[in-house]
Length: 367
Image (cartoon, rainbow, N blue to C red; front, top):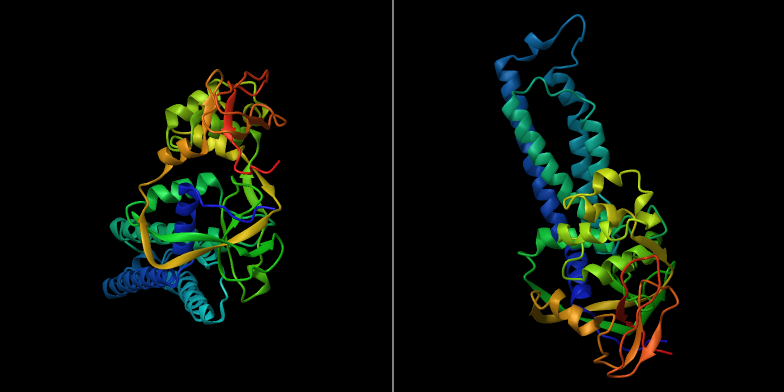
């Protein structure tokens, strides 16, 4: 059993994101954005009433469907319910209870009602504000979602989230893994917070809480063999973010059934869509033991010490290169390839249908 380990640079970034999305500060930010949206909606409703727009929109065929009165009576309540749910989520934090937002329900409800009573500019501004609000809330929902047995966040999703938040999180808290605070998938965590898998170094970190049964730890989301092959071939520094490198991985491995059977395979063979193609087919779930990731109070470190360093530290070697760090390695090209290499030993070629042989340092160095 692993009793002592350090977080990689990428795991630290994941922890920073999950603590941020689960923070009261972030939830209050959602409340404030929702207030601004509702205030804007109230303003254009007032303008519509003042200008008497509804009198021109009522008809024998459509009745009141396109009027502001109809929107106010039927769509506006979804915003009010959304706002009440956020207030409830904020109050629940006192009891260490977390949950999803009502963003999805609000979006579906509002979409059912016409905004033809507003000007094109007013509707465009409303739609823009709501789209930004929805994306903001989605980060909370991904973190808190308990509708499946495994975490919703994947390595791909958090990579995209990091791109969107890297500027704000250029300095992140210092984290330390706490092997004395662990639990298994399906159990309530010993503390509310972020957890890292003890058993699978590639498993995405997750957030869990102690205040309700819904807060239990879920199964992890980790790489399948296609995901491992992509990470080994492209490298952590370019994984998901370098479209050209991801496309080359796809084109070099056209016989991979995980990719070729994707219903959007042909259309996804572009630099823009190749990362999503691989991501749709790169993950599986895994039951695991989980270790609490603690924030070290008042200590911070720059997030820029990241993926390039991590790639070198973990070890990634091609066929013919010599081992510079004695230990256990594996190759995604063969599920049974794990073996011990001595310092200076040459990495061999594996005959496999899953593409190029890349040897990687195994985070689990137990025999």
